[in-house]
Length: 339
Image 1 (tube, rainbow, N blue to C red):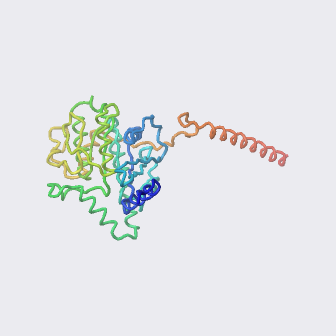
Image 2 (cartoon, rainbow, N blue to C red):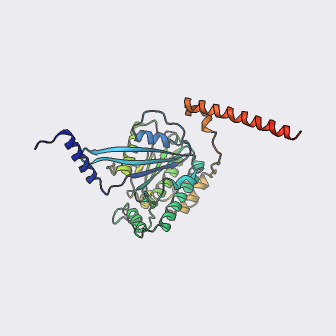
Image 3 (tube, rainbow, N blue to C red):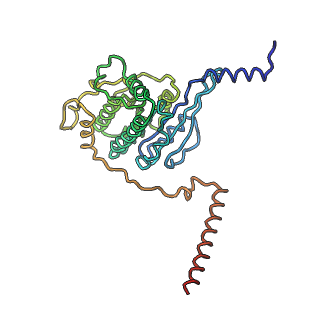
């Protein structure tokens, strides 16, 4: 019997629901340096053409990808934490028990502000790890810890020479060094030291590392591919670029401590190959003393012209006027009572 359009539509909808059973949406968390380009990278990933506004504390977006007509769409929930380390208390919103198994983190570090880079990186990653550990410790799901551990170890290729020395981050991690165009003009030894330290960090955490610049469409395109792989499980380039004269691009598990090598060609006291994150931190911070990001509460966004909303602003002005009039009346009553 020939089906009508309505019956076909209903059948396709049921098939779509059946195919998507058991699938869960992914969650992407963007954190990093202030004004490092997190919003720009996110907008490029989502193919949004408008100029992004400054992030207010914690903002939410979502990405949708058509896998195929038959299987419907996949959704990625995207959270962006603004203010570098200022609003870390808000991490409990995007990092929760419901999405932990499908959470990925993108850490964006400003390569032009090395005096804040290590502090920002360490503070954010430590807080994210604490949040994850808290969820695991308080969860009543006995398989959660093992699932996270197994998934983390799977990011290290089987038989990798550094397998026993790597401590994978609990969830997939992509470290993006932004504003590479500014780093590119620096002295080669400085670029090499920054590159080696970030490579060691990324490899130790079984994370991916890449340098980008908003002025290079090629580099932005690479970051879009990497983020898509985390969000939707799509394939990404496995080509490794480890030349410190070029923008670094290394996938998780593709580097090695031997390839990173010692710091013997650089002006550092410790000439041997580093054995720990703490050693690399000491090398980095001795050359680039860290400045703690000042926790300054930003100006009231309601006064920011970038966030104008005519109807809301008019109502707010009216309520403000009514409040001032009310205060004036109350003051008059109090003055009369005190006479």
